[in-house]
Length: 79
Image (cartoon, rainbow, N blue to C red; front, side, top):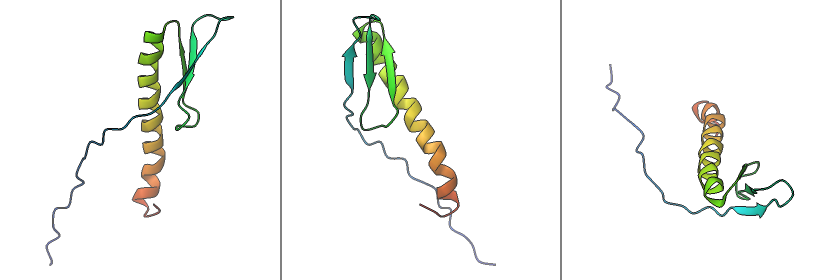
């Protein structure tokens, strides 16, 4: 019986910058925002600080969802 080497993924942190477009919403109040590089990544907030915090959550959620959607394909060998 051949021994199979212990192969594990290596986690690498890659700093990146994403640009968000923030739109004032004078009629509704507050702001809306989108991240053009991440289709469907939108959020809103009453203040710019709230929009910034909500953008972080929206981006984290978008990336987690994209990762979960890609994971079965990667496991099946379809990259």
